[in-house]
Amino acid sequence: MINPMRFMEITTKLHKVTYSKRMGSSTKGYFVVYTTDKKRFVIPLQYLNNKIFKELFRMSEEQFGLPRNGPIILPCDGVFMEYIVSFLQRKTSDDLEKALLISMNNDIQRSSTTYLP
Image 1 (tube, helix red, strand yellow):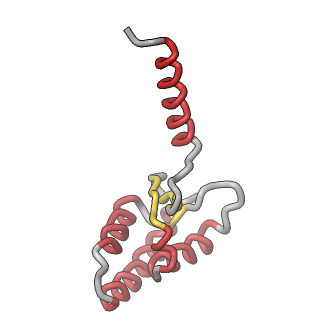
Image 2: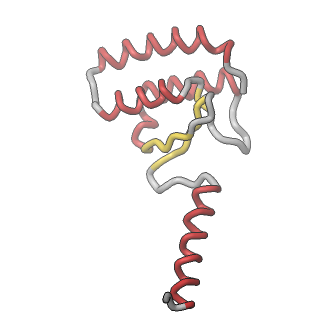
Image 3: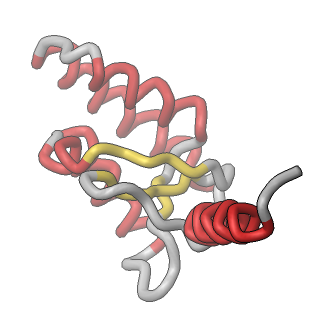
């Protein structure tokens, strides 16, 4: 049988962890974005200086405006976001990054009429 004090300690820790996840907090060194299909991504802060993310933020501002109290929504779906994250983790060449930016602009502009905030 578990000690009542130990039980309270465990439940308190569990509550804190559950509550912080529900509130949408992220770990230090990361930021949270959502895609148009409402998938949540926790992204390293180092990606903020990347051209791809800068372009996604610019497109997001154009399409959805600046978020005031809500989450940042990027104008792509979860599958495309997973591809971008894996692409950046592999640290590919600048030429591939430029090609992805061109492709991304074309694809997102073409499909932007299908997504509503």
